[in-house]
Length: 99
Image (tube, rainbow, N blue to C red):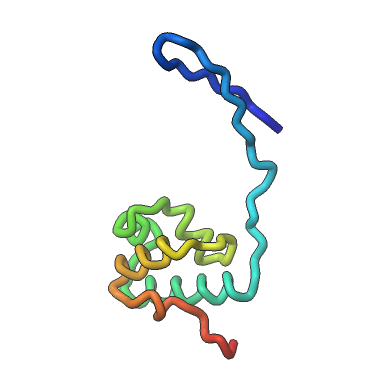
């Protein structure tokens, strides 16, 4: 599915086709779920809401919630950002390899 967007640049209109994603990769995997559980536990230990953590990290609250539910394949930069916001090391958010 495509949608068109009109852009104006130097008084010229450009029609740009943007690909609209049919679905996001929200497949819950064991690693994503384990990471989300650790993130949630660390957040709750600090008496933070998802909204408060998101604000501290500069992320959207719905993004934090979807990470905690194991719906996101979170990137390295966001792992570091969340760890800093929680005052922990990024390794503290990583799932145990034995589980």
